[in-house]
Length: 114
Image (cartoon, rainbow, N blue to C red; front, side, top):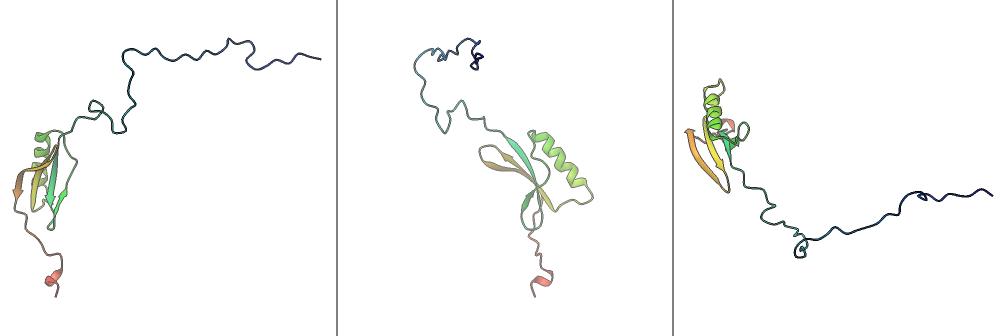
């Protein structure tokens, strides 16, 4: 009768070792994370245009204020410029920095809903 080889017979035995722990025992990770794990707040400049009813985002939010202002300057010079533009600073809160033009509420119904 031929000898039956067991799988893994020629290999060294597996040894399970726990990693060496340095310092005091670590606490269980918080499901909300710790302050060092949270990302730093990002500040962005949001170019917005007045569409006659409300402010809407136009273009991509920018990380650089100067770049956002140059974008709005180019949009104001364009062939289909909006009635008004504004630049909003987003950090921990939203702050309107500057408004170009006058946002006037426009009735979207012809003849004023008659």
